[in-house]
Image 1 (cartoon, rainbow, N blue to C red):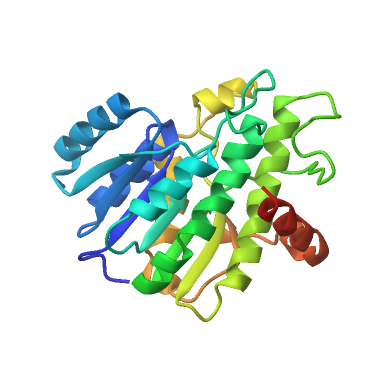
Image 2 (tube, rainbow, N blue to C red):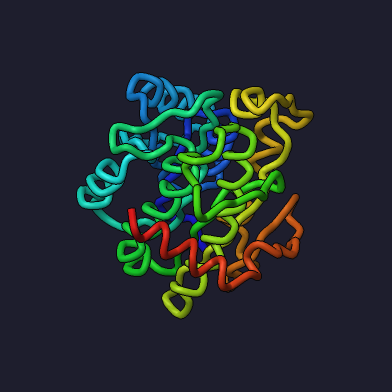
Length: 263
């Protein structure tokens, strides 16, 4: 997959890992990098910072809120030109249960539906741009998905449980979209980015022993390595394919897709 003239979009680009992913993609000669961020001031500052650091002036931003269907819809409708790499990285883990203006629990909306909406809304653009790749930043810290109560309307909210179920869902959505987009020239893979000390990890009560650049290594590798041209529907940790029993449960994957489509 030659980088020259390729366009890569990264969600959550102002976070610790997102910023490192954006920097590495910008340094991967030939890519135009589009930062998808909620905060316009932070996005503008990051564009200038990355241009100075990488020497790549082909860096831009678009303001979008991945927790809002309306925002993702507007982004996709107004997108001009191709898109060759979509890296879904945006995530949040509020300590207390929060609800978006669209009435959805924020962590489920951002970490799961945001991934779903981006893959769904941009599939036509990615097909037209093929060969193209989707990389979903998930985690090995995953599990406890409750499809009957994903928004903690009946359960007591716990941000750790909410985060774990969201990352399980991301790995399952990866398998679902890999199947849905097979034979289109689009690959879909997921990965654990590494144990990075970030606001998100701190909100979960953890630190982190890896640098943001170490955390960005596997996502960027999945987005750019020419040997992965046909690899799809897989889950990776530190560049190594790892069996995902969540994604192997086709019945649960189908139920998750039906649930996401219902929003």
